[in-house]
Image (cartoon, rainbow, N blue to C red; front, side, top):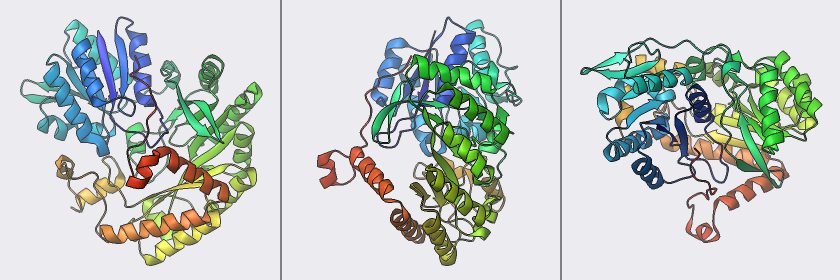
Amino acid sequence: MHIFLVNPRASMGDTFYPHLGLSYLKSYLEDKNPSIQVCIIDLSLVSEKMLLQQVAEKQPRLVGFSTFSTSRFVSLDLARAVKEISSEAMIVLGGFHASYLYEQIMENFSWIDFIIRGEGEKTLSELIDCLLSGRSFEGIRGLVFRKEGTLGINEKRPYIENLDILPFPYYIPHEVDLLGKRRKAATVITSRGCSGACKFCAAPSFWGKPRFRSTRNIMEELTGLVEKHGVEFIYFMDDTFTESPPRVYEICQAIEKKKWNLLWRATARINTLNESILKAMKSAGCVEIAVGIESGSQDILGHLGKRVSLEKIEEVAKSMKDLNIQLHACFIVGSPGESRQTIQETQQLIRKIRADSFSVSRSLYLFPGTVFNREFLKKRFCSEAEWLDRDVDNIRYLNEHDEHQLARWQLALLITCWWAMPFKGKIRYLRNVLTWLKPAQILKGWGCPRKPRYSEHG
């Protein structure tokens, strides 16, 4: 029995990070039922044409699509094309967007057979068992299915509390540019869930409270990646790697004892960092931490639910500089209460922290599952029906300022970030831009990002 798992999201430039959720699903499904063959197809690496050719050739029993709000129609349109080629193939959607808007999707797109809400491992495994045996879908928690002209919406599935029971995710070889060298890389997640209260983020509602893998379990995976696959760089993709400080110390000590010469990056919240934790992370090989700073206005931070002070941001940024840990800072333009004054306050903060790299979102996105989305739906600032409009890429908060004003403010912050960036950061940024473009495209303007040469993984 062939099963395809498809990731529709395109990677940025030359940097490719595999979809860790699909890698976990492949390992879990094949562990539970060795008779099935699961193939991951990532559209960052292969064309849609190749996906459809594989469908026609292998006639998979089930094709699953990870569904993001920004690429929802890529998933939906491909699912329809798959159904036209192989009418017997069952189509299942999962991910954030489908988990929250399952009724809208099932009512408007007849070719979707199932939707999995929340964590997918156990639900998808039970669905496959039912497809093989012919049993009813009624008892599969977390599943939405079609039932005699109506929808069957089963109860939510409880979270997997003991993450150590999950097999290690299937490893997809890839490389990244780091410190002037191509390095074999891997993505790892050591926890699920987040205790943050950021109103623009759906992670807390999707994953629930933080759940942690044991240090022993994490080190077993890392040992395999480093000693078997030759991995030199790890991207810890937890929403907040530093959620539990005692655990961070334990993991860092375990990595340091191995003496692997392993480098890694992680994502953290500013209010979970201090000089002591940063020193432990640095000693264990941490070279970069990505943090969501969002704004230099204390009022805006309060509106966003960030629970952090400007003084703490400056303190952590200084400690990272002192320890030579690169800071990747993320900012948002257009939050509730944004004004010329708050933009100027953000520029002042940027000049103080001098991040090594940065990203600036042009507006506040109202993704399904976020606090802001729920609040603004009640206030009728937005409508879920907008997600059915193909011309709507994202639902954005535009009640206070128009797109032109937000674009001007975004440009102002980008320029400030550039001038505040250390010289080495400027060189690295320019190098990355040049690798994204072929020489002929530099003259013609922005072209298509160059893609690594990999095929589907199965």
